[in-house]
Length: 143
Image (cartoon, rainbow, N blue to C red; front, side, top):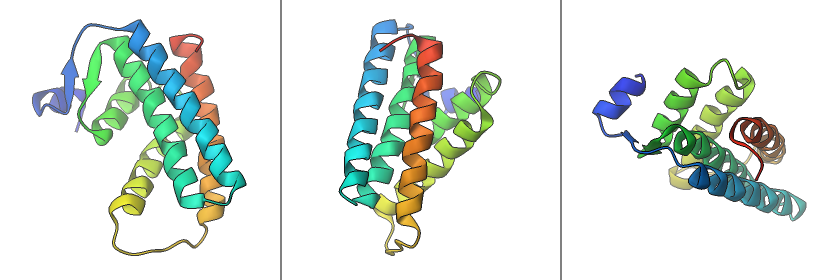
């Protein structure tokens, strides 16, 4: 799937670019990262991983708002960034955004509990979210 197909299917919607929404979404991403760090301190690893992903999601949305798009799908957000920002954002962040999207989905909607390695995954997710926030902030501007 590509951005054109996401637009055709209504997973992305074209709208006016909005720098204010972009900055607000970055602020929310920063807030979610702070929550993830606190959850790690309190050994709430499942929530920390979800909060780290949510940070990355809001950062990604900031780029969409900046470019004049609105999302209707977490997967479409990844498609958009993967296509439009492949040369501006490190590949590791784009890959981890998608991996955390899947992990979050499993944690929230999965039927099996499997917390093996969750502590390390949550720590890594928070570190990745921190780097992604910094990368997107350079593109969008200060929060």
